Image (cartoon, rainbow, N blue to C red; front, side, top):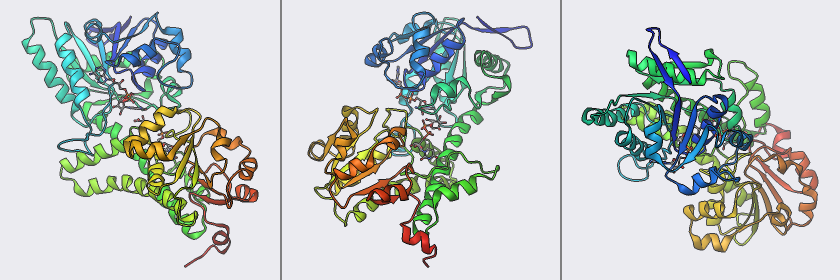
Length: 485
Ligand SMILES: NC(=O)C1=CN([C@@H]2O[C@H](COP(=O)(O)OP(=O)(O)OC[C@H]3O[C@@H](n4cnc5c(N)ncnc54)[C@H](O)[C@@H]3O)[C@@H](O)[C@H]2O)C=CC1
Ligand SMILES: O=C(O)[C@H]1O[C@H](OP(=O)(O)OP(=O)(O)OC[C@H]2O[C@@H](n3ccc(=O)[nH]c3=O)[C@H](O)[C@@H]2O)[C@H](O)[C@@H](O)[C@@H]1O
């Protein structure tokens, strides 16, 4: 039992937590809470039965290093997965809303604003099924003031109810990154909790603080106003995405001048005020959140008539799209301006290493550009299923083109056989260990190598015989001359 003293002698006790949304955030976060707080019963619910069945099976629905171990230790003891949303709402003291908030694809704000229909539907379920006091926690990433809408729905239920209904809505955004989720949850840089200034609001904040305080040092748990907490999440992702677009914009300058983006990033990142993290130039950031959260921030700025601020942040997306396109164009131009009918080996389809997640992966966009040029793609990824790859590409192109142009391989050497080029799109460690001389010998010649992840040194790949194109470094003749204007 977690008991909180609020200074007035009152206590808010959290014994039972429910999380609505058993996805990349809800599953790992609740597994960690259950693991660190055996006295709390945690139930994760979802409307997707297949996903819940997988959480209850030996084959979890998402791959995260360390997750399976924690789930197996707690499942059936104080961690439960269920599709019974009403019962989980009724029995909880505290409810996390951890559902998806994708970019809206229809109506006002299409292509920019986050779609809050899932968040609202959970708020309505809570309003319908709650029977006593509840702390409702926004774990999903939402725009500023989303908590106000949730509270309006809940307060309406409160007014109409004969039960002892009371609600407090908190903001507690999640900062975990996929692939390192369990490490991030076990040792977060910070936990952020926003709530109302009122006595009840602060009591609810204290209750959630105490849940995390089981394992997170108190000085890493920040408490703020609700709106600051909501905005901080969007801003944190925007700053991270901005760093990638900044270094990617510099990568283009490097390619044109003979500077090397790795050297520039190191020199710049040595300055403690700048720091060295998140300065890896790449074929562009992917993942389910960076683009949608930056767009959400841009939409918020536009709604507030802060057009210059909106333009500033929109630049992050513009550069990212341009970087993907630029890389695909470089492949076409280096392969003698035509890839039609040529086999091209694509290594990596996940949006980053150590995950099977392909949402908004740059690989989808580069593949799409190459398919428009009628290239035949031979795709290999160690963690992404063929079904998943095909689904993503069908959504961006058509079933007909995917059937005609895409073959998925389970062996990278087979994918590279007879190909005109190898294209690295995800930074999987295993890609560094292959015998590229063996691949080169089995390819069509001249054979090219395109490194979209800075995994390789130009001289090593050129020594094998490949023609090399790497993000952020120029061909040898430019590097040597060093000045081309
Ligand atoms: N994926 C990530 O690494 C991170 C995501 N976030 C944010 O967390 C939120 C969730 O993201 P993910 O876990 O990746 O999403 P997800 O798509 O993996 O999972 C969301 C789940 O919610 C379920 N759901 C939707 N509406 C429901 C309803 N009314 N009742 C029951 N279940 C419902 C869906 O079936 C789905 O399984 C998003 O707002 C995202 O921006 C924040 C930090 C990291
Ligand atoms: O809100 C979210 O969803 C999460 O988004 C990101 O996490 P994630 O998308 O899982 O992965 P990142 O490691 O941030 O990578 C995102 C993309 O940027 C790319 N990247 C990252 C770092 C870098 O230096 N260069 C670069 O191109 C990655 O390859 C990947 O495609 C943030 O890092 C998390 O803090 C945040 O909680």
